Amino acid sequence: MARVVSVQEISKHIIPEDLWTVVDGTVYDLTEFAPEHPGGAGIIIRYAGRDASTAYNEIHAPSLIKNSLHSSKIIGTLDPSSITEEWAKPPPTVSTSFSPDSKPPLDTLINTHDFVSAARQTITPKTWAFYSSAATDLNTKARNNSAYSDIGLRPRILVDVKDVDTSTAMLGQKMSVPIFCAPAAMAKMVHPDGEKGIARGCRKLGIPQCVSTNASFPIAEIFEAVGEPGTYGTFDSDGKMPFFFQLYVDKQREKSAKLLREVEALGVKAIFVTVDAPVPGKREADERVKADESLSTPMSGAKAKNDAKGGALGRIMGSYIDASLSWADIPWLRKCTSLPIVLKGVQTTMDAKKAAEYGIEGIVLSNHGGRSLDTAPAPILLLLELQKNCPEIFDKMEVYVDGGVMRGTDIFKALCLGAKSVGIGRGFLFALNYGQEGVAKFVDILKDELETTMRMMGVTDLSQVHPGMLNTGAVDHLIPGWDEHPYAKWRPKAKI
Picture 1 (spheres, helix red, strand yellow):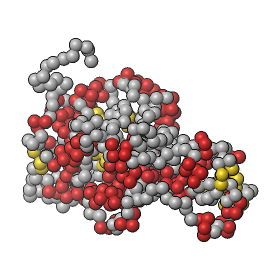
Picture 2 (picture 1 turned 180 degrees about the vertical axis):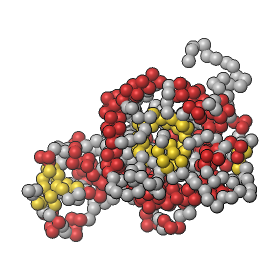
Picture 3 (picture 1 turned 120 degrees about the vertical axis):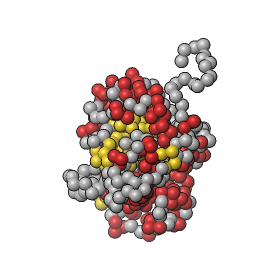
Picture 4 (picture 1 turned 60 degrees about the horizontal axis):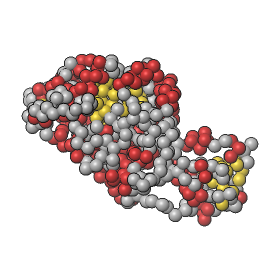
């Protein structure tokens, strides 16, 4: 039987040489662990003799402390009858939200931009800096959005559009609307439910979720969050929603191999290998705001730590990623998993062709949300590049886009140019600001906008879309050919 420990006894253990703290009703002896804590001893000492549950759960998965500490470090359970008003008060807060009380009611949000505005006002400065930041001068981030508005629609009239169907499939998995939740790191920074809340919202609306290697929770816990009986959108099925897994290949390859075996055993449907970030991009807004050094991710093992360059979470927590990953490693990936492989971050005709030659099942045209290399091409323009230079690609593999999608018209345009579905990353994080209900409403807004666009375009089913429905004249001159420059023929002496 667990020992019951009073607040009065816990309060005696408040020095580094004798340090107890409470997390979720369990009393732990952290004396030996504090100096080894990846985020530094300071945050633990701050909660010495106190309840650290709120601070812990904002960052970590509930299971982390139980799995990390030896059972001998568990003193017992907190006696709730001994809690005093003074003891229950948290220590002074290190950082605060912009204005958390100013969050507009969910029912007042009518488009995806409203979710962005609400997040800007109400999430913490560091969370906003991490999520919203992009590489250097932010040109690509802006172009990801604006390129869609440069492509016009050509509506057709007098078509019976009373009933429209937005359902489709990707990699054989049904989805009620051609949207999937793209992988995004550390969702718990914006809401305690993190990726679990995203999963519940996605299941309700019937779309897949791609879980990041840098998720706030182990993927098994995210699966469990939607494991109870229920429905997947409006589909007649067993209620199970499809999950994909995004992989950053670790420098210690066996860690990645082990992770791939684990996610396949859980029931993941495909592996999305990120290939557009061999190193993290320079995200200056994220660098300027210091990171919480207690932050870590359970699957990658990455730890936050500030240094002389700043506090960018993307740079610091991406240090484990293997920059030596190359085409020669595709056979190794095939040995590690029998699941379909999707390359996330293809940005040229040449690499799309090469992916097809290697038998890759799908590619995501993406520039990491503008977070890797500034002035890289917008995903919607990459669709045009593939249609111009290698249209046969669309018959050999599934093609998706990720980046810049804010409207139902954006989704429609991507589908007309051959995309099977679109991924959205930041948008789901900002929607999560309202929990799973926010995620569900976010998707529902885009679905409604897509249905309206289809009706205005004289389309009742997504199988009817095609490039002729678009006017791309304003951007056609921006679409390159193969790897040769149209007129500059200079070459370096050394072979590249």
